Each structure stands twice: as structure tokens, then as C-alpha cells.
Length: 239
Image 1 (cartoon, one colour):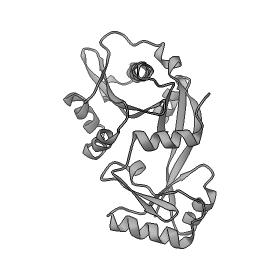
Image 2: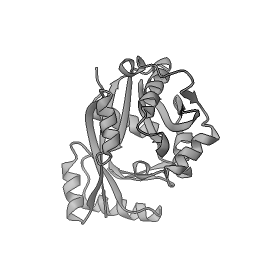
Image 3: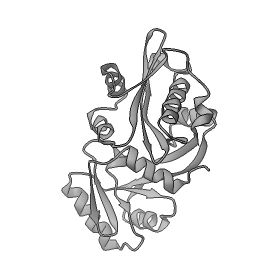
Image 4: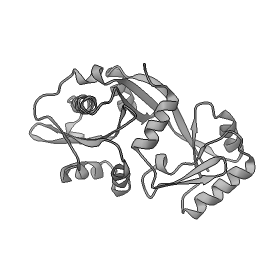
């Protein structure tokens, strides 16, 4: 059975965790420490929030040295509207995709074209850094407590790409998939997704999932091409 959006929200939470979670009444604050929006955005834990709770959350994020940022998931239109009325703008709508690991794992990549290794090799960090994925996000990966690995891609006798994969409750999720510019359009991302699924299957996962911004046409087209199903999504609002 394909996981639903609520399940994937939890997978995102556990495979890309914040440095700290801070209860704020019916809302939850996150301390990101440079790990990006996913680990810095406030969310609603209970639907019985008020305008005062939003103000408290704004104050809390300011004390953390973070901008006022909220993640809005499916079914949270009341909070979405309230933030819009406070002058918050929508940024970075995100799509979530999922597929049984067996559907991807059957596409075995060529020998020595991919390697599953934890901790990542130095060249992997170099590839991430070239793509703007730096120390704050590396710390997020280090915080993950469940099964995890990096997938290093190699093509044309040279390093080609890097990705992070982690598993929560039988569902693997790929994060930070980065291909070097001169290695793109050669099927490297497909090979690395297959390698990630093979690793996930060996580590007990039944499904592979990914998230990407709606504006990232290349990534969305890749996941569509791989046969992944669009499960749902979320977006942010920032003041």
C-alpha cells in the first residue's frame, strides 16, 4: 500500500531532523542551525491555535535568530489564510513522490558506477559544497538516528554525484541529490536512485520517497520518468 501524505510528512521529519524542537502551545518551533527551511519552519501540532499563538511563535523564532517561517501542509488552510492576512508570502511549494523500492531496485546500475558508504567520502562533501549544500545541512545528516547512507556516483572515470538516503518506519527518502554539471544528462541521477533503492531494500524499506520544489523542473521530470507517484506536498509562508 502506498504511503499517504501524512506518513511522508513524518518521514521528512525523521530523515531530515531539526537541531531542536521547541513546543509553543499548539505550534512547534524548530531550530535549524543552517540546515534549511525544512528544519527551521514552525508547524501546527494541534488545530486549536489562535492569533496570539502565531505571535508567540514569531517571538520565539526571533529569539532563535531565525526569520518567521511556517510550513503549511495539506488540510491547514485556516493557518494558511491567517498567515496570508499577516503579510506572509508563499515560497517554495514542495512535491512529495513515492514508489515501491522493488520498482527502482530492478534497474541495477553498472558495476562501480555507484557506491553506498557512510560516512560520506571527502569528494562527496566537495560535490555537495559545489551545489550549495554545505555544513549546516551536513549536520542534519549526522543527526539522523535510523539507517542512513550516502550514494556516491561515478561516471566517465570521475566522481559524478552524491546523495543522502535515510529510512524511517520502512520508508526511505533521498535528500540532497546533487550531480556535477559536466556529468548531467547522462543518466547518473537514475543510476543513483536505483542504487539508493537497492540499499534501502537491503535495509528493510518497502518504499522509496523524495521531495523537491515544484519549480525544479529537472527533478520533477526525473521522478515522473522513474514512475514515482505524486503523493502530496506542502509549502512555506515567510514574512
